[in-house]
Length: 609
Ligand code: AGP
Image 1: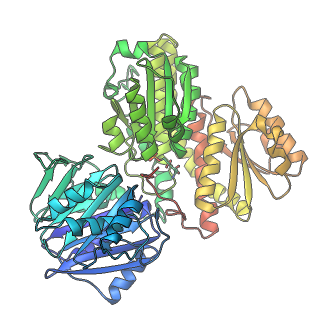
Image 2: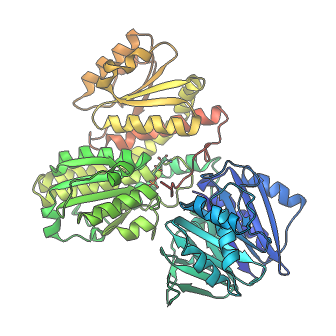
Image 3: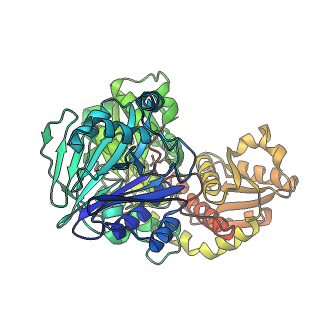
């Protein structure tokens, strides 16, 4: 949450800062600001609203300088307003700070600083940092930042520039991500990698507790005690194009369409083409350790948690392992009963979600083995877990997760087969047939995408709804939850996902002619029962939109609208069934005029609790 971008080099900083912030806008977009140093003087411009507002303001009154930092905000402390926007200044307006995270003891610090005569302008937690650094400054900015941070509790990624030390950016990280990019005669600082891919693919990740002193040509990194660290930059292989819209009107639509290739890339290198053998060297688990696992716990938030729910069904079915799914925020504060034979699988697109990270720490503290299923290379959770399996989906920029979800499901499916084989729960023959089904899946996803225009028509009948219900049985239930979440996020229609059988225990009271009900009724052993639920909705005047398997002739007479998906095994049906629901949510949101890629109040990575 919140995005930070910094530039120092031999060119004007402003265009880089604006461009970088636009790419980071998915992290927060209620207000934004930029500060530059021009001929040793600080210039600050900020405004409420999106980066486009800031850009308009800066077009009227540009600010020069070859050093600068910018911020796009997702408010935690203090409402979105000009005064609460970052960068925040000290009393003398000689230095500015941008910050992502939460300073937990800010009230106490603020009181003390105010007692010592500091003048506060905002109601943010961040402003205490500016005043603390001001107080600690005695000729060395890096030292002042370090001393200030010793007094702070909480999480932060921050960047500071100062008139007193104008040829550098000082950055520090504890909890929230911060990456330094190394160019020719210029350096960058960013909250994520894609925002600077256009300029450089040579990066250094700051680790927790580390600080950096960044000039145009050099970056010095220190640990929290001030000890200089030798870190070798890594080369990122993501192609800069992958972080652009590529002709689509929104990232969400582009990412929906990238699913066939994302799933292929996720399978590639993990499944042998001829023998269909699965390789997961990155698990960092010995054969013995795999066999010893007697319980699996998935932990995640949001869409990734829904992937964990599908994982529960798959691991129980294919690996015959007792499996649970836990919201990361709940898991970390309970007293989970786990030990060295428990495998905790954290699922996270960003690898930066604060609660999921804390859940991994909790699991490690209790001696469990941990694996991260993650999309962002080198992210915090990827580095904290004992093993990491990357989803290879490429950068996901749209706030509503799409390709990350289906690639997470791909990994989980493969892991469930692997564990099933190692534990003798499924035969070689069964495993081979399950893998063949997966290999043919991307083509089927392509066929679902070909039905986009029909789904767009269905979206027309849905656009003025105020509530919606999504029902599914078995592995269709997590997909009902995910379909409802997608709709809520991007279109602001209230939607609920339910196991279809639960409908009679309450939600049925809501059904009338104004309530669209989306039912997942793909083939499988629960199909007949789901038909019964459709009848119950129809009998009460509800409008039914069904996602059914191709060849199902019966369903058309029972539903108001049918979206067909290709036939596949029950185990893989969630992967196909979710796609029409993503497209449906997308078009409903577009038709309602919603800001699809940056829905209100949301941020892509939730890096605060
Ligand atoms: C998905 O559409 C959401 N934006 C959100 O629920 C997301 O899945 C959740 O915040 C978890 O993020 P992560 O996968 O990066 O950990």
